[in-house]
Length: 536
Image (tube, rainbow, N blue to C red; front, side, top):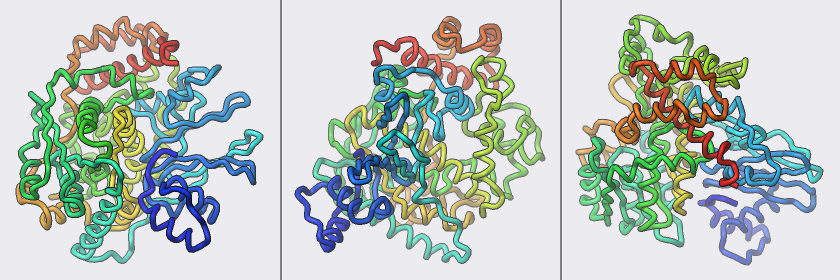
């Protein structure tokens, strides 16, 4: 069992009325008794973040379960006569006789989005259990298909007024935050100064005014919300630790080796340092992760609203130069999936990837595009909702939550995410688009809550990302030089002639991002394929 069940105490009370007797005060024991009482249907009663397995000696079956949003990871494999599962691929890779063959499908998804996503991991034979799923394995080794026990709801056809909807959201967030604070060890709260973490922090302080707020201040980094964070902590007279972090602490490329799958999100570097710093003060921390995906906080959501379509070209001009205006999507994009990739991970076009990588599959990006088309189908009500659904199924779980889980666990820090309580998620997907985003505003519900509970300084804040300044930390010229004779070349993972031609190209357009993708992949190949023996 990996995770936390936040409503285990009320479940325990219910189970005791059914005749169950407990010998401990743990949520783990509650899961077992709930399974005995309700079978796998018990999973729908759990509120929390969890990945666990139950061996049923009566039916001679093992059941694997993962939480609704995929906050906690769960990987599994079947090779030979062995079925194995773990929270990270590296545990499976350590099994005697397991082949460390990279998955062309997994690495293709990495090239498309900057992270591996879906059922297939970066490793051949290692699969992810999808969020909100169970998997049953028979004693003879027969593995069933994942079964879904929860899904994102459709838009409510009779929505409440804005004020009533925000009232409901406030109560859901308060309740979720209160549940997430239950702990028998010291608890802290991330306070970046951004809207999401500040709202969570405010509700945390409502429940426990003594909770320590934690803010990281990065030397020489333009992103600095420390003063705003201090405004909230001072207004609430809350304990507040500001940790000043030198830029050389960020530039630790060894962090990439700890992920055991390639991940091109540059915020892995500040996330690693922040988790290490906060662990010096607490063992559990609440964060504001999930707010951008649920409340439509990314600029791309506004770009997709009808009133902004005529301005699409302006939104990507900083990524690619010279795009035409007046099209449904930019001239370099053949479809909406291409456009999504341009905004999220402006890396390799399919034709370019095919020239560079000998393992690039014949199907190319088509399987991922089909998933995108299915989740963003016009049959799904709400244009913004379509993009949110794809983000929730991919970017949220396999980029953001994976990054946070890996790096927080590295420091033995348990990070809890009250915004991703499934009741809050259901609220966010039921309300219509116009309650979340307009041509003038993003993340409307959180802004309305901020007007009610936060100091006025928060309302005029410009959204700042958590990405690290890559070129300052890893100068492109030095990275390019290393790639020329690096691990991708040594392992035969690239066609050398077009690869060397790419490295010689001038730094313009999205070239530097392609180099970053190659650097991440090169580092992964070196650590997990070429240096196989030291990682067993």
